[in-house]
Image (tube, rainbow, N blue to C red):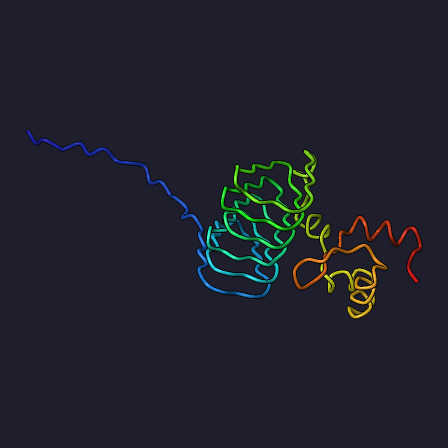
Length: 187
């Protein structure tokens, strides 16, 4: 009589690797992701960030950019507007100068926030394209108004268009610009 060993066969489980991008460098430009990724920035970045998934701004990071994302945690310095479609967390070492749009906000004691905050439960259902249209820079607004960027910059500097100074540039809120257009203040 032959004995057979009975091996337990484990079902094959496919585990998708988590997509993680850890940036510890100085970068400029536009960084946009089509697929969800866990992005951690520990260096400096200047430009525009458009992320999906989670974004973590490390304690030593220095960011000068408008940020659009889903789940954002800030521990470093950020100069720019932040739109989070899911939630935004500022840790005790965070220093944020810019406006916030998010349905869920957590600010730990010790964090510094200078700007305006708009929280609306309906924000969670916004599409990314809608969020990115809410905040515009000079070039975005020039395209939107179908004028040259120099005209937009001149209007902002002279206070003829609703604008906010943000670092070395200007930021425009689409709703305010639309109201400005509707009031026929364009000269």
